[in-house]
Amino acid sequence: MKREPVESSIIESVGYDAEEEILEIEFKEGGIYRYHEVPESVYAGLMAVDSHGSYHAEHIKHSYPFERVR
Image (cartoon, rainbow, N blue to C red; front, top):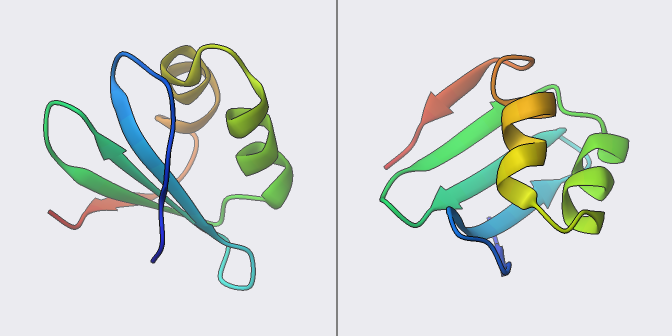
């Protein structure tokens, strides 16, 4: 999945597959996670905010099934 770099203290890049509703986040400390069943509105919200890390913690981290892919 192609990810776009973001300006964040903890997130390196973000990618999204609208057809599969998969959100992929690469963290600066290491690790790439795929979150499943994520609506496009949540991805849009993540990309629109100033603090990507806070948005992830509040709206994504404990809300969607995920897997660590690396």
